[in-house]
Length: 124
Image 1 (spheres, rainbow, N blue to C red):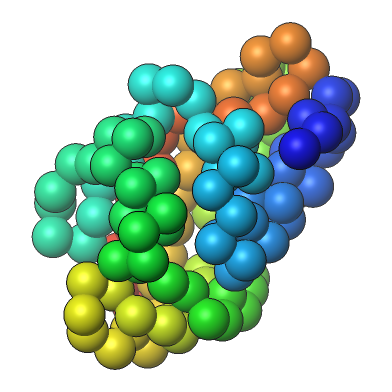
Image 2 (image 1 turned 45 degrees about the vertical axis):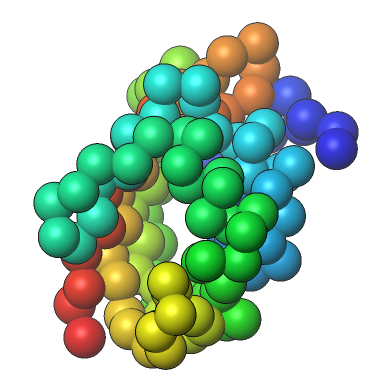
């Protein structure tokens, strides 16, 4: 996968959503910082390798990732995206059909945006 340098933060968020939709572990690997921490709706924290393995193994399979709204704050080498997504698929053997709100903190490394921290909550 080619890493796009100097892309906008909004474009990086779009690539992340595309990678989630496609279950593209290679793209996700490139978009996630090595120290990334995800905080899920239940408060559990997940690191990069566990997240990638969930996608790789099929334990988390997103069939649809539909963006409802987005805001982007680019502060130079740090940025925030806030999105509401309607997710449909399967998660650890259960059907997933939920609207989630995510806040992601991104850092720019060598011209490429990577997610350093993310938190998601169920809103519907």
